[in-house]
Length: 384
Image (cartoon, rainbow, N blue to C red; front, side, top):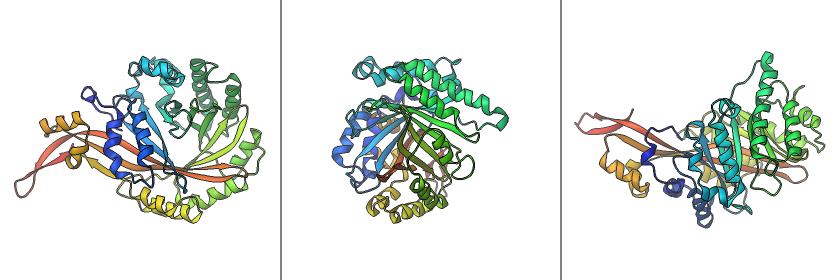
């Protein structure tokens, strides 16, 4: 969600905004019972801390449940917003606070090479209110001449995470295998995200890798074999080739523990994410339904999710303080929510097949207004 200059007025938690958007998420995607669990999680997240969230939900006929993630951009990183109540309830919160405190030092490699933290909650898991931690690395594709320097930059971020979290949350053995996975990357690749799955029993490290080739000398298969991956990859490559005509870009997702894990993933993106232009998403979801990766009902519901909601139209369900502010200052600032499809992910476990997920994004914005006069002399708001 967009940077705002008036955070002092935003006393709400993210729960208030997720409540406001509930009417746009049908029960075929997330049941009322499960949405209440999401709201309980969102009640821990101050709006001043995170202005964006993503729902992660299965596309097949599994129960209507979803996990949820909250994004913390660099300009909102403020360790004081993580209260003692949160850090005492779960070590993952304490770990996040430590990472943010490190990032607050402008001379640290985390501040110089990262621009987002994400906290992901496995709402259906054993620890629904314990977040896994993701660090997004600044997107600076290096020329070949700077490849070693760039690799060192990613390694420095990994080192900083490991030294900050310590062996309890980031096994030294896992660190060594993750370091090797980074060092073995082809020269065309970079790491987009590093995730520490602290909410799971097996605290794997997740790497989201950008720029890898599907075929050729720097192929996915060659890279995975270098890491000791021995399972067959034909099905995994084949599903990408079926979906690639509908995609603009993709990333490879791998899990690392005491070596590379069997689960792999394709994270699939379209460059066009305007909520009002969904024709290309429709083509992609038609293909997912054809491949039996997505149910027809969920496909229809997801394609109807994107759109805009503003306080002008939905003041009755808007957070109270923003509603009050709008009532008293209608000529100053408009608040609205943008709903969009962020991306899809195809997970693959050898001998178990595929599982597809949709990632639906919700962004909160505040924009200044100017008031224009129409031909009838009536005033209407226009976003500055």
